[in-house]
Structure formats: C-alpha cells, structure tokens
Length: 340
Ligand code: KG4
Ligand code: ZN
Image 1 (cartoon, rainbow, N blue to C red):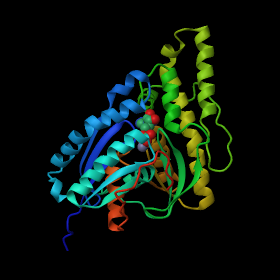
Image 2 (image 1 turned 120 degrees about the vertical axis):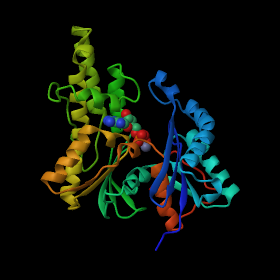
Image 3 (image 1 turned 90 degrees about the vertical axis):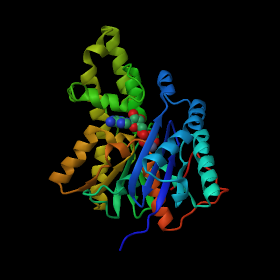
C-alpha cells in the first residue's frame, strides 16, 4: 500500500549553523546549511553575532530547502525545530520562526532535543544501510557534549557517562587553536593527521570512574608540551604539525573509545551508534569499523553530511515525534540546557 506523504520541515539554529531540511517520512528531500563565516576571525562562536546571522539567514535557507525538495509551504505536515540545548539567542530565532510557520499554516509544532537528534540521524532512510535496533549504546561526540547513552527507544535515552570538563570537540578545537589552526580545528586536525605518526608524541589518558571522561588534562598537557618545545625551537609546531595532529587526535579518541569498550562489555549491548560533529572523525570511524569486523559489534555511523549540525537530523527526530503525536505548545520556550 502506498504511504501518504508526510512532509516535515526541520530547522536547526542551536549554534552557528542556520539549517533547514525537508523530509518525507524519514527520507531526506533537501538538507541546506548556511555556515556563519564571521566567527572564524574570533577563533570561536560569538553568541550575539550568531543570533544576528541566524536572523538574516533563516528565511533564505528555509526557502532554499523547500525549493530543492519541490515542496510548497502548504504541503508541509509539521515543523520541527531545535528547542535546546544551545545558545539561547540562536535557539530563539529558530523557535520564533518555527512557531510562525506552525501558526500560519495551522500545522503541528514539534520541539526537538538537539542531542537526541544527533543520535536519531542514524534513522534517516539510507536505502541499503540498516537502521539501528533498540536498545543500543549511543555515543554523542560534539563541540559542546560528550555522552555515552543507553538508548531504549526514539525518546528514552539514559546518559550513563559524560565529560567532567571539556567536550571532545572543544578539546580538538582548543588544541588546534594552540597550533594556529582555524576554527573549528577538528576537521583540520583530522585531515593533517593522515600525514603524521600517531605514536610520535604521547599525552596522558586520564583515569576517570565509570563511563565518564575528562579532556582538560590531555588538553593542558598538550598545551604545556607545545610551550616547552617552542622555547627550544620557535619553529617546533610548523616542523612537526602532522605528527602533533596525529598524536593528539589519537589521544583524544582513545579517551572515549576505551569507555565505549567498557560500556559494551559491562552492559552486554554490542550495538553502538554514534552522532555529533566528531563522529565525522576518521580515527573513531576506523575504531568502530574494526570492532564490527573483529568483535562482531553492530556499529552505526551517520553519513558525513548528517554528523555536524544539520536540519535533516531535526527533521527525522520530528518525524518520529509526529508519528507519536508528541507536539509542542505555541507557548513552549527553548532552553540553553535541557534534559532528555
Ligand atoms: O555537532 P557539532 O556540529 O556541533 C555541536 O553541536 O557542537 O560538532 C562540532 C564539533 C567541533 O568541535 C568540530 O571541531 C568537531 O565537531 N568536528 C570534528 C570533525 N568534524 C567536526 N572533530 C574531529 N574530527 C572531525 N573530522
Ligand atoms: Zn550538534
């Protein structure tokens, strides 16, 4: 039997990307992003500038997403948007816009948790790729969060481990900044690492209880090491950039992979699903592929376009909420910190 179309408009504006996507059920018809170049010169996101840029970008990006999907506003079944966590000023731009669309078209409004959406990106219809089966271990690796979760269903995700200080993406970005790399440094470190030796320099892997992790120790050890070497040789970073990138990447990834291994061992759940910007990283992808082959884990890694912030993941999370009639009130308010 042919399924009735269900067109969901997804809107993401939690940080510095203004994104819109259109899905038919869990199939992506368009996935558009406007990056905010303005932050590069500051080496990090400036919240006030991000909100202003969202305000300027949101109408054009939604327009583009509808056009690419060949959908008219009136065809939409619901509008899903990120209601947290994130920068409040940025979230409010997406939320106000989503509310206007919901009111104007008289369609359901669906607030989506950004971190849940990173995991649910793995449920986007990819034709040949199998979707994960519940329950599974979810691993969220982003610029603001590092979480190990037990995912019971689309909406019930229990955090069993988190970072005690910096997030993994934040550690990549801060180490990159110290090496003079542009923001965000994660993808640049990943690229340069391919030319380097991961064992050239070694940094500590902190011992933290349970499934929690800590990144500030590795970051500080790395920064202190650079300072010390620069005193002996001013060109130390330039002369060793690929080995430095490769070694610190290897260290940062090891911190989380040893906790993933522990979670699989202790819970007996061997299905592991990752999400978030750092899930684009080559080393973590290699680790999961290797576990798939050698230890029979079932691992799910989203395609690159659904790893860093995007609206398709908000759309797919919105679709599952739509199916379960989990709608939001027009009076709901986005939050910079939000629980699952
Ligand atoms: O999920 P995301 O786009 O935004 C947040 O919700 O934070 O994640 C952004 C983070 C940045 O810290 C960026 O440096 C990192 O993801 N990132 C990477 C890679 N691609 C993005 N880190 C390591 N390797 C990559 N290939
Ligand atoms: Zn994110």
